[in-house]
Length: 162
Image (cartoon, rainbow, N blue to C red; front, side, top):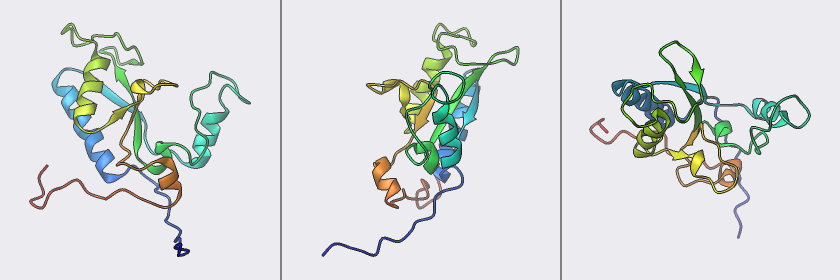
């Protein structure tokens, strides 16, 4: 018998606690390397997602997403977008910028740190590459999330430490 008791799981209204915690760790790790990281986007409502989807379609600008409202990990609090801040205070998306002058692009350093914290990077996607995008799907697909499944709520171990 199929289970018909599909309860309506409320949609998140903020970043998932683990994603928020790891985002903060990423900012701190980057800062230790002389990289100022800016989170340009985190949780996004379905309505916000739909507005973004319209870009390059029915509103001005270039296409920036192929996900409609409810089809993005941002809508479930499981994704962030980032940019870099220069010493002059400009927010940039320059993947070759080496602000800390160590011979490695800051973007590359951030992606490497993010992956070590458990993020997946949109720049690794086969089709539409989303270079500022980092997500944690916890093994759940968008369909799983749309069906009410949610990831666990804490990354802390029993002793409260990572």
